[in-house]
Length: 224
View 1 (cartoon, rainbow, N blue to C red):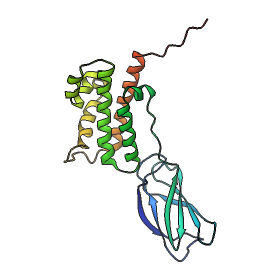
View 2 (view 1 turned 90 degrees about the vertical axis):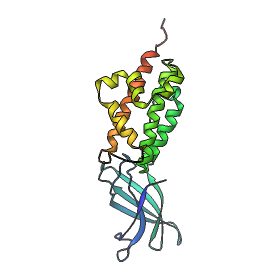
View 3 (view 1 turned 90 degrees about the horizontal axis):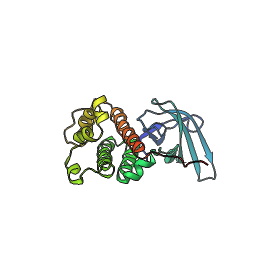
View 4 (view 1 turned 180 degrees about the horizontal axis):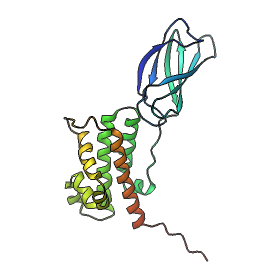
């Protein structure tokens, strides 16, 4: 699934006198941010009298990295078939995946929603995923009582089980305010960049990964 919007324009050497109707991507497949794509180049490949492919090279105003879209072309209309590169998959540390598969699954779903431009879903998904990660860490690795952990809100969970983050940065406040903002009816922080939320989420993931590595160090086998 691609986030697109309808567009029409003339493409030189193909339709110099008429507009072609086609969908243009509005999410960059390279960096995942919204963009206003610029057409860099285009080619029409003819395979038969009834089958032609239109390939358009785009460049965005976000990361300036080119990407390509393939269309099926017929009668001044182009139907989007594929975009290259495809949506990026997220990389989640192995030890975190093993400890909290539910977090990994929800985080990956949120990333897909973000790359398709569904920031409301992505924001609430990221917020829920980080709560699952911290609580799984508390229960499974710190052996905290499950019934007590489940009752805690996200802010208190961060303060108790990720004390380094809570003391050294304002990340706990950012997640409490912005994370909750994506799950409530009334939005209060529309002017704050979504990227800020992602950056602080990455801090939490890195902290949990570090704690896991320290608790379960990878010790090489003794050599003779």
